[in-house]
Image 1 (cartoon, rainbow, N blue to C red):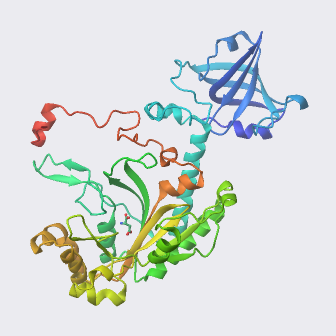
Image 2: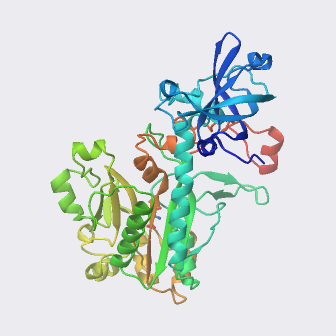
Length: 456
Ligand code: ASP
């Protein structure tokens, strides 16, 4: 394994070192060749004088043994961390030659067509900006995990091949070979499983969960799949979950030195938010704070539980599994005053985006059933789709609630990226094509026959 990274050479002046990486740029001055050697940590200028240096091409993979030297004062490059040193090469090995790259990797990349960047994402990630985003992402998730482990939460994986769970989007469906004509759905969220874990007595659950939603593609959103920090806890009230998340964010952001505008986070009712900002997501920052990329969090509460569909029936505004605010429980059970029922839902807003949301759940089966009845589902349909939940709640489900935060959006906001795809290693294109590989793609006739499927 390579022992030393480029960044560590700063402390090795006068010493012989061995470095591995890519030849990011090459400048030839007669017999002297200057190379910017890049690895994941930084770049360093290498000075080579032997014949073999003439053969290096941009982005070749190289090994260099040499002496770290201080640069003469007037040649110091203040723009890079290793700008005061250079490597005087003694030995060079070209470990792999490269074909000419289809895209530049030494710029920030915004100027390149995104389809091209995603087709060659493994090259695109070579650019330091993307490495920085992914490296921060890893650290961010690690710091979040530490918080939840410290607070006695269990990280539990829930199934991916599953049954539909309504979050207001379309499902991705997967055909079953063993039961032709039947389908799995990929989870829009682990909502039902995490509630079932509460019935199971887990009490404190979290997961860095992949969720799948077939929503219409949007320029600034990742199509298809995204990552959420999913949480559920038992014997809690709305304020407990809000406090837990607020404490977590403040602690994690402090550790990672990310400034937050206002603590505790301001709380607005849905009505106040509409009056003040004209929307339930808003940006509380001044122009100056936007320039400094400060993170401004706020809570929005007291949403209406139900809204009318285009067909005139009722549907949930956020989550059918939510409980109403306690003072509306009777209305819910009696299915009256529907338009005025408020839910226990709390949404978290940051810098103009909704970055999370959750609620206290209906832990009594008759309340959950009432939600589906208000939505106009027939007894049979409720039984078929949600019978397992209603049954489970009947076996001593504790009062419980939770939340989910959009990890991609939080990181994009911290890294000052407009598009969440900039902080995801291999996102789909905005048109729903996978990075690098060609999915969705046709399937052999034979495979379709096995599944009992005919494409029309
Ligand atoms: N399941 C919700 C979502 O994915 C979050 C929650 O209520 O915990 O948006």
